[in-house]
Image (cartoon, rainbow, N blue to C red; front, side, top):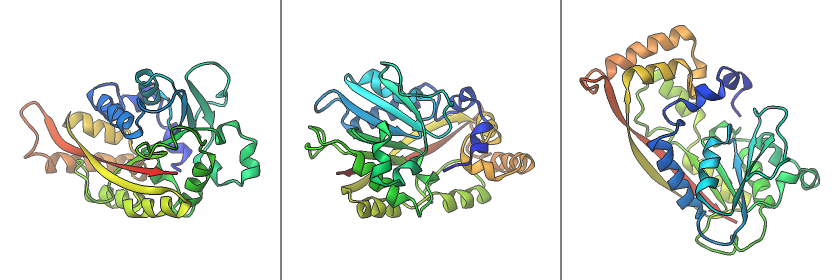
Length: 273
């Protein structure tokens, strides 16, 4: 997964203030898409959702607050050491990485969060998995799913991955950043093949586009703050130079108020046990 140094460069506040993660129309739309994708308002209750790489849990709470009877467990390797399963809150936290799912079943049985969940959400995290680990991570997640009313309903997926295309992106970037992006972003076919090889069924995906508007200055600031791990591959000087390239490339698209428009394209990959 992404190195610890990348996350240490950000506070929770700075991360959540980025356009794609702050409270507002974008995250509200994404939360609705996820609720629909996981059918959180359908089926038996209560049920447990495992949110892999859920970070601060703010997005997770958007789901539980709008879906009665949903309990969530956020699993993230960069949570505070004090994170435990204690408490009666509908969102609990576990400091662990997705690679924990590659452990054998005996070890898994010793970890309370590794079993008994109804569904798994992986939002913007699958590209951090080593391609050599991906299939076994998926297999471990499949093995931990509980058999319940949810698993018996053919229209409700057991696992939902949200990621982005390897090549077909519309973000205001520069060539070197696009190359880094493509190198680190797995192709959707590879992800789907690993899900199938791990034992999941009915693996399919769709593209969810979203029109974005943001000031050029804010976008440049987000790039310099390395809000995506792609930008962690560049020095401060390189990012300064890149932002000038972005301004030149966007000169014809920026409006009189300094606003640029682009399309965010999310891939929703669903799989069933």
